[in-house]
Image 1 (tube, rainbow, N blue to C red):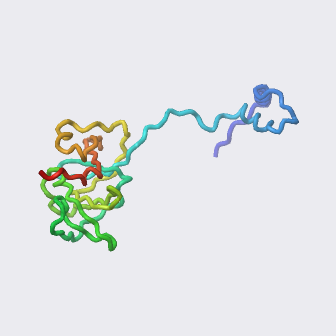
Image 2: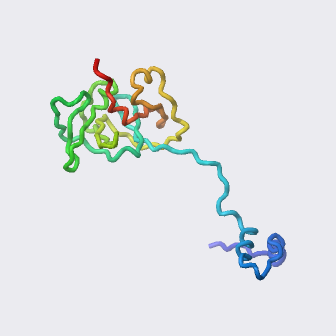
Image 3: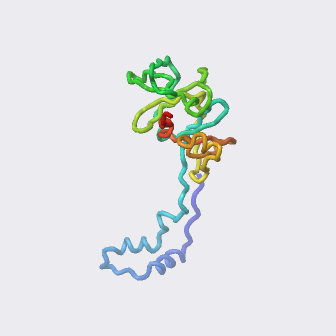
Length: 193
């Protein structure tokens, strides 16, 4: 263990007392004033840090998508899905989640892709949308990424015209770009003709 070098035998105390000025022994704030005068500030002004978004990245075919982690409750394996006759389009079925009914959205068909072919990598991302829990069926969940908010770009025009109500931006995820989904927007279907 190394020890600190000794303080010089002269000069230091005189310099500190000179910086602090004369002390009035009757002043009840003399200790606080001394500390304020000679001590370093506890907080050094730093430039504001950029807000980081935590996103769960997942795969739908070869496309990469992301959702905000603060809306994700858990990620579960796909168990037996029960079809619901007469359910709205894009509902793959329901699954029991600890005794509660979890509606499972066929995320790929909602985004204009063919339905998920279930595999060992398939997962259900349990998310909160419009104050309710629902499951998003995806091909695979990759990992959580931290992305500075400034790196979110608006979706390109071809994406904006095709799925503007549920894609809010494009974000870099590793070496690729991912479509950032608006989970509430996924539940909005166009009006029937």
